[in-house]
Length: 383
Image (tube, rainbow, N blue to C red; front, side, top):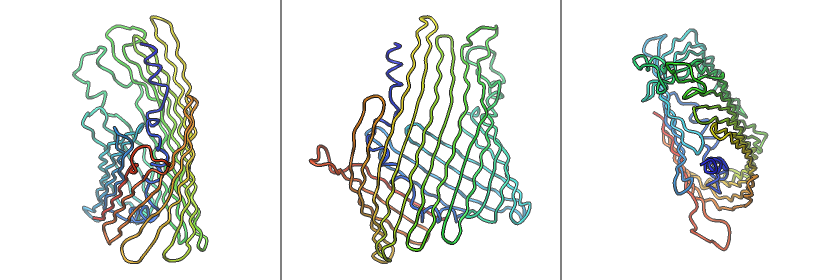
C-alpha cells in the first residue's frame, strides 16, 4: 500500500501532457484582449482547450456592475477555472458604497453549494474605472463551516476550524499611452482544521493545516515599433495533514515566467516571440504510524518553450495567426523529451464580440500519430 502511495506522488498531474507549457502559451489572452476586457463593466470571456484525452482546460470569467442609487451599487463576478492542479468555482456578490468619485467600499460574499466553503470579506477600491485602479480585500475563507456543524454532535465526522483561513487579496491595474501593468497577490495565514472527538485522543481522526501564496503580473511597454513585455506567475503552498493512521507533509512551489518581444514590421505583419519557463517542485513526506515507515519524495521539473506568433492583418475584422512552438522538458524522475508544433489561428474582432480559434498541429516528423494536436478557443462578449 505504501509503495502505491509513493508512486502517486512521483509525478505532477500535468506531466501526463507532454505539451503543457505550449498549451499555456496559447491559452492566455492576447494583450489587446486584456485591454478590451479591463475596459468593460459588464462582459464575459473564456479560454478553453484540450489538455489531454481526459482533461479540458477551462477559464471562464463573467462580470457585471450596476448602480442601484447614486452612491450604492452591486458588482457580480464569476470565475470558473479548471487546470490540472488548480480549480476555482466562485460566484462573488459585491455590494459597494461610492465614498467619493474615485473611492469605493466593497463587501463581498462567495457562496458555494456546501455552505462550509463560503467566503466573506470587505475591501477598498481606488480608481475611476477598471483600466486604472487599486483594489484590496480582506477575506475570511470558509467562515460558515463551524456554524454549518451547529447541530452535528462532536465526533470524528465533525471537522471544524480552530483557526480560520484569512486571506489578503490585492490587485493593481494601470494603463498609460504606451504600456500596461497588472499585479495581483494573495497571502493567507496558516489555518487549523481539526475533528472534534468527545474524548482527547492523539492523533485526532483528522487534523489539517496549510497556507498558500500567489503572485501574478503582466506588463508591456511600446518603444516605437517594438513592444517588450512578459508574464510572471508564482504559486507556493504548504499543507500538513494527520489522521489516526498516517501524516502527510506537502510543500509546492510553481514558477511560470514568459518574456515576450513584438516588432511591428508594418500595418499588416506583426511577429511576436514568447519564451516561456516553468519550474515546479513538490516535496512530500509520509509517515505511517503502525509501521513507522517514512517515505520522502522530492520532485522538480524544468520546462522551456518558445512560441513565434506572426499576425497577418489583411484588413477588416479578421486577423490570421501563423506560428511554431517547441518545448524542452526534463524532471528529476528521468523524463527528458522535446516536442514541436505548428500553429494556425483565426481571430475575429467585431464591436462587442471577439472570437479566436487556434489549431495546433504536430510539428515533429515523421508524424507518429495525428496531424491535429490540441485546439483552443477564446470568446469575449461585452454586455
